[in-house]
Length: 216
Ligand SMILES: C[S@@+](CC[C@H](N)C(=O)[O-])C[C@H]1O[C@@H](n2cnc3c(N)ncnc32)[C@H](O)[C@@H]1O
Image (cartoon, rainbow, N blue to C red; front, side, top):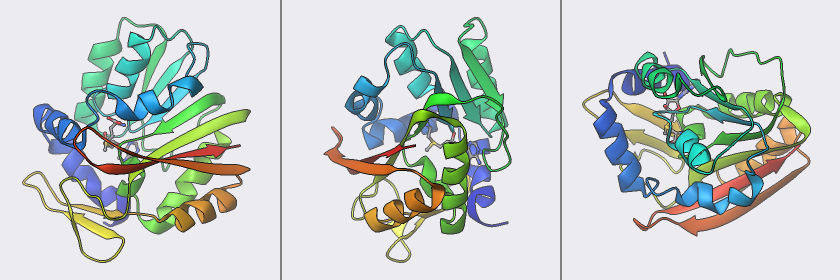
């Protein structure tokens, strides 16, 4: 097993409170990333989130009184259970227990969110394939947001090479690939996006991050 599949062990076993503490360590618990792109998330746009975790982004949208559909895609059985229980009475939230690599989606949405380093869990060759797939899930005016760390800033991991990042935990190891700004521009081009822009920012816990916007 390699690439994204090898990282599933971590997400399928990490206790919820440990996952939440990583979110806090990264500085995401107060939605710094989502506030940055809030103008693109009016209550009327349909949103798909890749790797919805325990629902941090969905909670943000619901706190803002979101009205259009929200689709949370999550591969982890334990996290899916958390999501399904949390949103079972909410008609606008749909939780899909799916692996994004093999998922088909018949409709199209306005916005896809892939935040908090989700892209890094995929090997370099998988990253462009998934970006291409996400483009096909978007409407003609759609936008994809991808949030990743800046090359020199890691929360709880250490480098094995310039862009290969390895995180050792008691719940399983995570092997990730951190793309550069040039990689992101190349991916976007190969995946057929028309325009790429990036905002560099810092979280309250002083982590330097990059929020990419890819326009269909
Ligand atoms: C770093 S967490 C991000 C959680 C959430 N998006 C947030 O911003 O708080 C990455 C999530 O992606 C999920 N994930 C990893 N590979 C996936 C795949 N192939 N398909 C769907 N979800 C995946 C993991 O299980 C995990 O919940």
